[in-house]
Amino acid sequence: MSLISSDIIRGHLDAIILRLICEKDRYGYEISNEIANRTQNKFQIKEATLYAVFQRLVKKELIESYLGDVSLGGRRRYYRITSLGRAYLNEEIRNWHDARDIIDIFMEGLQ
Amino acid sequence: MNEIEAYINRLFEGIPESTRKEEVKLEITQNLNEKVADLVARGQSREEAVKKAVDDFGDIDDLKEELESSAMLAKSKKLGLSLAFSVWGGILITALFLFINFYYSPNTIWFVFPTFAVVWWPLALFFQWYRHKKEVPVGFAFSVCGFLLITGLMLFINLYYTPETIWFVYPVFAVIWWPLAMLFHQLRQKSRKEEGFGD
Image 1 (tube, each protein chain N blue to C red):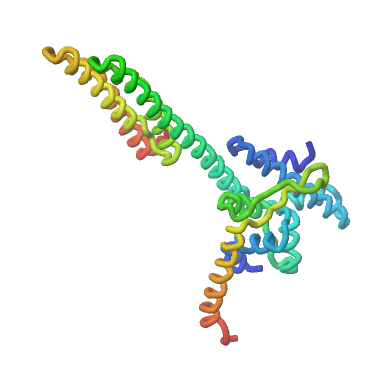
Image 2 (cartoon, rainbow over the protein chains, first blue to last red):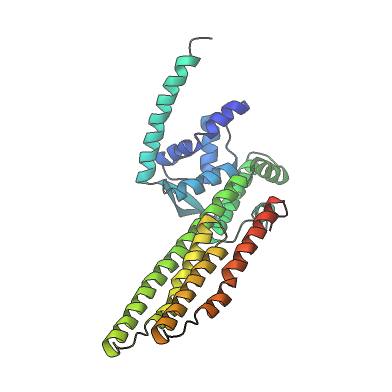
């Protein structure tokens, strides 16, 4: 994946991760795996970035964490979306559709 | 301690200690161990798996920033609570002294003395909170407030107890060196910073 595309995605990481947590409660490694699988390895999130996003989302009270099942000697920390997080995600999806419509006007139909 | 734990400990070395930091360290270590185990299960050697996990981890700067700002926010909240407590405590203590003064000895005003002592409590906490929140030096502002308080007290004692002799200027002259010194210290620090010496 080119650097520019990767930058575009980075601007929407909060929404992407919120979307994955919105589907079901998930933990860090599961999310990075899910991103790689769904994009067929075209986009892989760095763990350092992923945990920075978690911190940001928790601080904004968009997600909350809790300790779940035990794996490899430690308990996994799961994240679940809050009602504020759901509202934020819906807003982000609306914003994305609007932006995509505008960009499509200029980018589509030339190739 | 395995290689992943050692790597994460090294990465987090510069970040201020907090419960959140320990939780995140634990979480990342656990998740990376799971990744290593996954890679080993897919046929990689443990060394290769650890190397891949470490190489893929990425730049910790964003995470560091988030953790530092979380720690700052938590400290700011704590300082804010202490400040609120000191304000209410100050008000209550002052009200008590006001009552005792005017109920038992209305002919002599003395409640200003304990009030003067108590007011330093919220004042000091306010400036501590403000310095933390705005990340600015507050020494000069604190000294000005202190100067005004002491001047007010001296003025009161002078005019209330010995109005025939004006003497409050002498202690005021002594105290004025405090904000003056703070002002020049602050200006000196500023100019050193501008010259590139830092603190």
